[in-house]
Amino acid sequence: MIKLLFIINPTAGNKTSNLTHDKILSILQPETFSFDISYTKPNFLADKIVKENLEKYDVFVAVGGDGTINEVGKELIGTNKKMAIIPAGSGNGLARSLGIPMQTFKALEVIKRMSSIRIDAIKVNDNYFFNMAGVGFDAYIARKFQGKKKRGLGGYAKLVARKFFNYKGKKYRIVMNGHSYHEKAFLISFANTSQYGNNAHIAPMAKYNDGVFELCVVKDFPRWKTPELAVRLFKKTIHHSPYYYSKSLEDLEIKRNGKIVTHLDGESRIFKKSIKIRVIPKALKVISGN
Image (tube, rainbow, N blue to C red):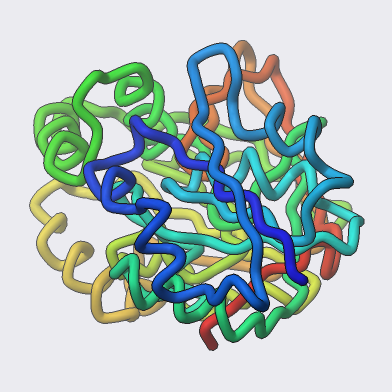
C-alpha cells in the first residue's frame, strides 16, 4: 500500500478547491493507494506539515504553486520520500518542466503511474529552490506580490505592467569561477529549469538534473526593446538577445552594498550584502510526467 499526503494551499488558486476526496478516489484505487488531506494555514505552512508527518507517508503531494512545492520539497531533500505535484499556482514552472498537466485529473493520472526521477536542489545561503530564483525586477515584483489577497496570473500581470517602466536596473558584483566583476542588470535569474512558468523560458538550456544551474543575466535595456524580449522569452530564443547572457555553474556569489531583495521559487526573501548559491545534485525524488 502506497501512502500519500495531499498538502493543499487554499490560497494558491481556485483550482485547489476542485481537489476533493472523491475526485482523488476516482483515480487512485484504494487497493493500491491510501491517502489523507491536509491544508496549510498562515501559521502552519507546508514545511511544518511535512516535518510532522515525514515517517507516516511515502509520497507528499504539493497542491499549489512553486512556493508550496518549495516548502514541501525542501523537507524531503536527501530522503527516499517522493514529492508529487498538482499545479495550482500562477506560473507552475517546475510542474510544466516535469511534464505534469495543468488539469487536476490528468495530474492525478501522473501520480498513479508513480514514475519518479531525482532532480537537483539549489541552495541559497541556508535556503533552497527547485525551479527558479533571482534578483532584480522579478524579485522586486515577488516582494510586491507577497501578501496580496488576490493571487493568480491576472493579478501578477497587472502588477508587472504597473511597475515595469519605472524600474531601474541595479548594480551587482558577481563572483564566479575565481573571478569577480560588476554588472548593472535588469534582472539576474538562477535557473534549475528553463522557465519561470506559463512557458516563459528565461534559460532555454537549463535541465533540472544535470548538476549545474544557469546564471541568466538580462542587462539593463531600452524599454522600447520590451516586445522583442517578450517574444524571445516565449519562443525560447532569449539567449540570442544582445542584452542577455548565461553561464552553467555549480556555485556562485552575488554581492551588493546593502540588502539583496531575492525570490526563491517566486517567494520573496531579503539577504544582507551577499548570497551564495550552490547545487546539490539529484537531491530530491519527484514523480514526473516526462
